[in-house]
Image 1 (cartoon, one colour):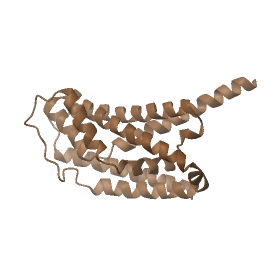
Image 2 (cartoon, rainbow, N blue to C red; image 1 turned 90 degrees about the vertical axis):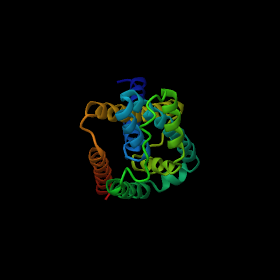
Image 3 (cartoon, rainbow, N blue to C red; image 1 turned 180 degrees about the horizontal axis):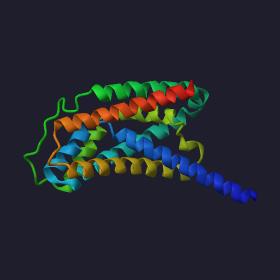
Image 4 (tube, rainbow, N blue to C red; image 1 turned 90 degrees about the horizontal axis):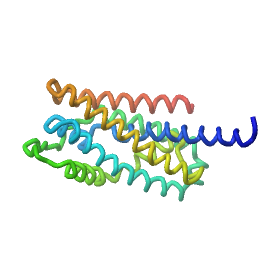
Length: 220
C-alpha cells in the first residue's frame, strides 16, 4: 500500500469518525424533552407531522449557531483541553449522568401553556418561533462543551474540511431526531397523551445516564 493511499484512508477514517460523533451529539442535544420538544409534539398533534418537523428544524438551526460558537471558543482554549483531556472526559461523563437523572425526573409540562387554538400557523412562523425559543437557552453552550469533551470532539485540530463535516453531522443528528419524533407522534397521535410524553422523557433520561456511566467506567 503506497503512502498516498494510506493518507487518503486516514483522511476518510477521520471524516467518518467526526461524522459519527457529530450525529450522536446532534441527537443527544435535541433529545431532552424541554419546551421545544413539547412544542414539536404539540404542533404535530394539533397541526400535523410537518408542522412539528419544521419546528424541530428551527431548533436545529439555533443549535448549529451555538455549536459553531462553542467550536470557535474551544479553539481558543485548545491547549487547556488537550492538557486536561482525561479530567474533562471524566467531568463530562459525570455531567451526563446528572443531566440524565435531571431529565428523567423533570416534568416536561412545567411552565408550558400550549397554544392549540391557533391551527392556521404557517411553516415559516413555526420555524421562527422554535428558532428563537431555542436561541434563548444560552446554557446549550455548556451542553456542547460537555459532549465535545466526552467524545474527544474537536475538528479544529484537523482543518477546514472537518469543520464543515462537523456542522453537517450535528445538523444530520438533530434532523434525524426531529424527523423521528414528529413521525412517531403523528403515527400514534390518536393514542398519544401526556403520559406518553413523560415516558419518552424518562427513556431519554435513562439513555443519557447510561452513556455517562459507560464513559466513566471506561475511563477508570
